[in-house]
Image (cartoon, rainbow, N blue to C red; front, top):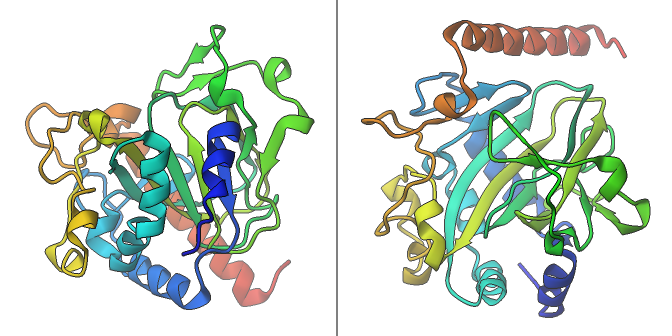
Length: 289
C-alpha cells in the first residue's frame, strides 16, 4: 500500500483524501470470500449480520475477515493517521456495510468527532450505486445552524447554504480497492443512487487520547496472530471504552438501542431483505433488464 507523504497535506487541507485502487484484485477476492462466509442475519447485537433500514452490516468484522483487519492496520496507513493526529491512532470502529436497496439518498451532514473515517470500496464506484460527496475544507467551518438526528450523532445542515459544486469532491469512476479517508467533521452527503449493492469496509480511527470513544469490539485470536506489536497496540484491547457495544451485557448501549429498532421493525427488515434477494434472483434467472 503506497501512500505518498504529500497526501497528509491534502487530508489536512481538504478534510478528505481519495486513494484510487490501492487494493489489488487478489486481496479484494480474499476479503469478499471471508465476508460472504458470514451470512447469519440476526438482531441480538452479538454475531452475524445486522439489518438497519437500507443497510446490511457486519458489526464484528475482525471476527470474520483477517485480510480486512490486516489491510486497515497496514503500516503505511497507520503512519499517515499518526501524522494527522500527532499521536498514535487507535481503531475505534470496524465493520462491513452493503446497500441492499436503491432509490435512496442521505442529506448533507457531518458526523462530528475527533476521528477519521475510512471507506474501503469493495466494488467499483459509480453514481448509480452511490458515491459519497464531500464539501472540501468544510471540516474547518464553524457551523451553528444544525438539525440533530433523532437516531444517531449526525448533524444535518441546509444544503443550499453550504453546498457548491466547485468545492465538492467525489470518487465517481474509481475502481474497487479505492480507499477514502475523511474527517468526521466534514460536510458530506450521498446523492440519489439507483442500484443496490455498494459494499464497503467502514472504519473509524481516533487519536489515542480519545480512545474512550472507541466501540466495544470482538476479535478472533487467530486473526491477530500475524499482526505486529505495533498493529496490536492500535486495537481497543487494553483501554477503557464507552462507545457503542455490540454485545448486550448489563446496561451498555447497543446498535438496536441506538436506532430504536422495535421487534416488528426487525421482522419487517428481515422480510424486506429476503424479498430483495428473491427479486434479484428472479431477474438474473430470467435475464430481465
